Amino acid sequence: MIFADRTESGRRLAAATCWLRAEPGTEGLAIGYFGASAGAAAALWAAAEPDADVAAVVSRGGRPDFAGPRLPEVTAPTLLIVGGHNDLVLDLNQQAQGLLRCERRLEAVPGAAQVCKPGALEAVAVLARDWFTDRLAPAPQSASGP
Image 1 (cartoon, rainbow, N blue to C red):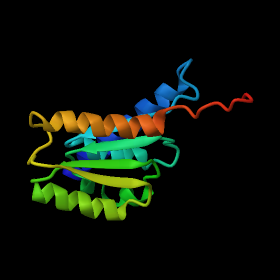
Image 2 (image 1 turned 120 degrees about the vertical axis):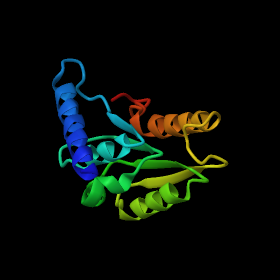
Image 3 (image 1 turned 90 degrees about the horizontal axis):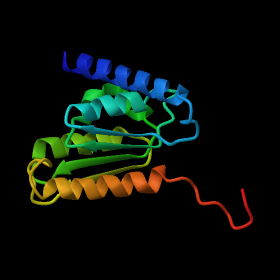
Image 4 (image 1 turned 180 degrees about the vertical axis):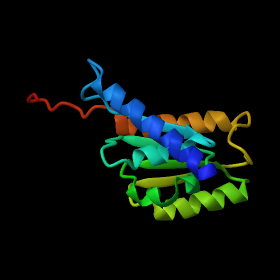
């Protein structure tokens, strides 16, 4: 049942992405997915779609294992963020990191069992901001022009 829920959420996110890409003025814009907790699996599921063309994914305190066999199909650079003292979720994210074939990084927030605790959320915000900034920013134009 849990896997089916994430599959449906992933399908809805993929459909929303298709809709967004068809909207006037969005062509050429990079898209990133941020999934927290249960939404992390949905973000990874949607990012594994063959035509997803997602520039980056951040999974915060999630269960990427719920994305099931789709993890190796994710091509977007993926940041997995977990609480450093949450051994179960840390282990599950380490396993998922091994299944991802894209650029990936696992960050454990020190001193946090859950990344939704005060102080830990600020660390998550900085990690996610930097991940997205580095991967969603438009490529700089050369001095000689486009």
